[in-house]
Length: 199
Image (tube, rainbow, N blue to C red; front, side, top):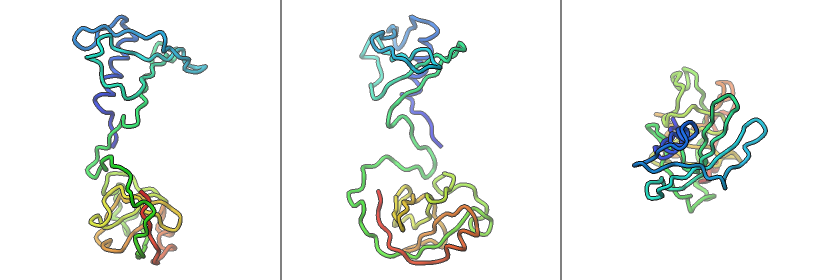
């Protein structure tokens, strides 16, 4: 599940209020005004995009992105905030933001590879992975979480998989790749392959 951070939500709320009640009042009575020098065209179907600032900079949120406000022409406005970390993962197995692994591309050795799907026989009919995501073919892999924490990226036979699941029979040097159908999982069978770190 992904939710907006408080900073983004506060900035978006402040900007939306500003559109309808100029001049509006922000944090501790500081006036929020549009900056005319940053008004930009938002495209043919939208009227104008505006970046906003808080007059009292000490009360302003940290500037880590750009707030885009566009009029849709129907009396409503759209607010969009561009920031790399504007969203946070919030599931029980959510992966924390980490520095890229210095050992990317490193061979982890040979593993036994099997396949599974979302059917009752393979996974009890569960629709979500242990990390809380919906499993995707050519993406989701089940691994021993003592070896590979959730979010670890593994390269197997030219495809990068993300560790999002675990299984009672998946331990040690065994990996279980998610397939769209039971027939595909059976067709893949059990085989060994060299696995590389792809983080």
